[in-house]
Amino acid sequence: MLQTLREATIDDLAEIIKIYNEAIKDGISTADSKTVGIDEKLEWFYAHTEQRPMLVKEYCGRIIAWISIQPFYANLLAYQDTARINIYIDKNFQGKKLGQQFLGEAIERAKSIGIKTLLALIFSENIASLTLFKKIGFKEWGNLSRIATIEGIDKDLLILGQRIQD
Image (cartoon, rainbow, N blue to C red):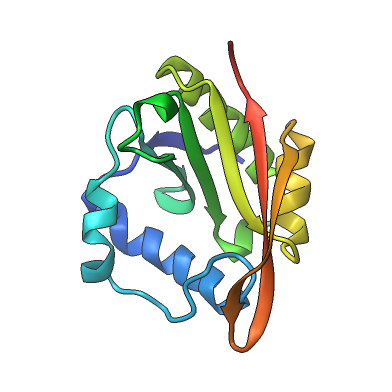
C-alpha cells in the first residue's frame, strides 16, 4: 500500500475532522465527547507550525491518518524540547501496521526539528493506542487516575513518554 506523508494544509481540515469525529464516537480516544466542526478546530489547526507540525498520511489522494505534534507547556522555556504527539487513523485503515510506520516517520520528523522528548496522553482502556506506542519504545511515565469523566464514566489518563534524542 503506497502512502504519502506530508504536512497538513487547511484544505485537509475537513478530512482530518472526519477521522477525529470517528474517534470521538468510540469514547476512548479523546476527551471530546461531542463531534466537532471546522470552525471549532480552526484555531487549533493554525497553532501548528513547522516546529510543531500536523502531518497527514495519504493513500490514493485520500487522507487516511494524521498526527499532531503540539507544544508541551508552550509558554515555559524549560519544555521547549518536549512535545505531545497524537495519532488518529481512519477506522478502515486500522490494524494494518500503518500506525507503527506513521509514528516512526513522525518521530524522525520530530528529531529533525530538535524535539528531544515526546509524550502521548492515552486513556487506560485504549489498548490499541497503548500497544502501538509501546511497540515503538514509549514507556508509561505516569497515571492520572480518574481525571476525566465521559458519559458518566471516570477514566484514567496514562502518560507515555520516549526520549528520542539527547
